[in-house]
Amino acid sequence: MFQRYLIPLCIVAIIYLVSTSDALTNVSAGLAILLFGMLSLGSGFRAFNGGFLENLLASSTSTSVRSVAFGSVATAVMQSSSLVSVLSISFVSAALLSLAQGIGVIFGANLGNSAGSWLIAGVSGMKISALALPLIVGGVLFNFQSSKTSKGIGQIFVGIGFFFLGVGYIKEGFEEYKEIVDFSQYSMEGLSGVLLFVGLGALMTAIVQSSHATLTIIISAFAAGSMSYENALAATLGTSVGGVMTAVIASLSTNVDGKRLAMANCIFNFGIALLVIATFDYFMWVNSTISALLGFGEDSVLRIAVFHTLFNLVGVVLLLPLIPKIAKLLEVLMKDEDSQVDKPLYVSDTIVQYQNTALIALTREVYHLYENAFELIAHALGFSRHDIRSEKDIEEVLKEHIWNRANEDDVDIEIFYIKKIKVLFNAILDFSTEAQAHTQDKEHIYKFAMLTSASRHIIEAIKNMELLQPNLKKNSLSRNQILSSEYNALRTHLALLLRSIEQINTDEEIHPQVAIVKLKSQKKAFKKIDKDSIVHIESILSKKEISVPSGTSLLNAVGFSHNIAKELANAIIQIQKTRLEFEDTPNELEESAEGRISE
Image (tube, rainbow, N blue to C red; front, side, top):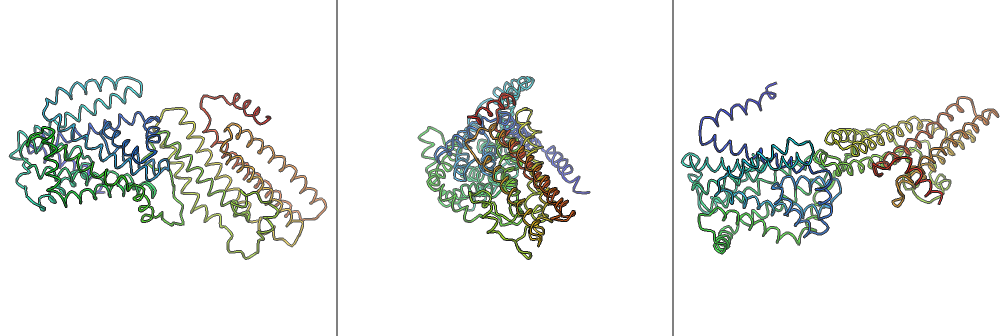
């Protein structure tokens, strides 16, 4: 119960401590306003997640150089390396980007993040209110508009405005109370000083989860004379080290590829930090030389921005050619968990707010569920997935897979369901519900619902297989040759039905509506086979070739097998519906599809 009140009590304590000092009040208020501005900025850019940012990311990362360039530009524009990093991790975990492409974007995001130091240093010499207040007013007015785009623009304006305002408060706090907020009292020279302030910068960034906030404090402290030049550079280096926390936290809920990308971010930032620390005097000399050439005086805060850009640029230049090797190394070192319980491969909380990405990830996860279900059903029939998907004659395959009564390879449907079906199904339902809550777009809501429906049909197929299995093997091995041949024929028919569904499902060139019409035709064929089977079984019963209980079980088995094929066909139909243009009417598409089939 105490834990429930722990965070509120801590917040109250922080408010009290801050209020006891005017210096802390100014700096803390500035920090809070700046962080609020960053949150608003991120929310504003997310308002454009209807596909623009996702499509741009997917189309701008074909090579390592383009990936780095995209990461740099996107971060410089959005002023949020965290947003770009999280988006990259989401794309890689959803298999929409390769690991190497994601690494390029992450490296570029680190370079683009240095644009923030130029912005902060640039506005530190201006009258902040002249920039901030008009932007906040304009942003609020945009927020009153009804369109999502206008609200997004409003959030961006408000975010930039509060960002500038926060910088102003922090700057004033250090200027007016530099005797109280004085880092110079901890000033140290040499390696010990570098390590101390790198650690300080890293700690502050990890706590506030914003390198921009820490950079504002560093630049303001340096401008006020409460932090030496050398210590300010070391603390700036520390912001890159502490900044990896956001990507690491975001990767915790992703698959192994997302974690590999977060590790690549750590390699970049820790690697460049070690290099700069080892050659700190040399980097200081290069930084001073470049700053002098650019006309920045010894007390200019822009020298910090130069340093921030310098070490990130060196990191990109050194590691850019090694991106493919880093990707391969991470794949070797960080192997996927060999767990008996299958986990979601594509859906995660980090991508739920990106509609197009979420839709692609959910589609792939439903196919993942379908693959597991197909494996279960194939093995329960005594076949493998390869057998059903191959061109082999099913009768010949049946002869190759002769069941024996003590076969240890028999699939336990209940255990298989728990290990490879249930977790995926629950993840799909949760993700689909969350994704629909994040959008008001009717097309996306419809498609999310179709995918959820598809997963339910898959579960129904498994339930019918569970009902079919107990009598399937027993009666296939019956000493009554008639009964045995009927159950083996049932296995053959169901395998052929599954094969026909798979042939339609795996045809990448087929128009989705053509696939839907073909699948519906297959469902009609299932019904005919079902009726013919019933007539045939009744004939066998009338001749007393099998017992009445055996005939009843056989009729039930026919019904279960028909339901399995029907439910899997329905699942693929629902998935195919998500590939259709939302505006297309079913009648128009039906006519178009039937015309293509007749051709």
